[in-house]
Every structure is written in C-alpha cells, then in structure tokens.
Image (cartoon, rainbow, N blue to C red; front, side):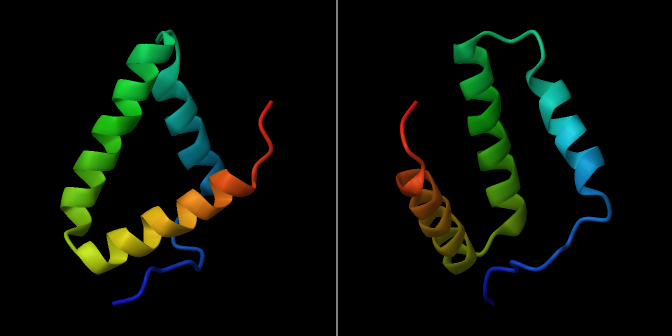
Length: 69
C-alpha cells in the first residue's frame, strides 16, 4: 500500500490547532519527546513498514530542502 499523499483529514486547521496545543508550555526537550512519542504511537497504528519508509524518506527530503535559520 503506498503512502497516501491526498487530503485525508476532514479539517487541517483543527488538526494543526490540536498539534500546536499539544506542544504549548513545553520546553524544547519535552516538545521533542512529545513529537517522538506521537511518531511511535502513530507508526504502530499504521503498522506498515513500507508506508513508514516512504513517509520518513519524504519527510527527510523536505527537511533537507529547508534552509537553516
């Protein structure tokens, strides 16, 4: 099964708000830990290593193309 890159959330704004709210009042270390925990939980839910490989590769390409601040 390929990685689904089409719109799959009903409301991206609600999702972004939920994601932002989950990081509120956390220091940088806690925020990183939260992100890591979310990745592990959602990866387990997906359960398809081929899809996860695609997602990690695509995310890496996007990060590498982003200029440092």
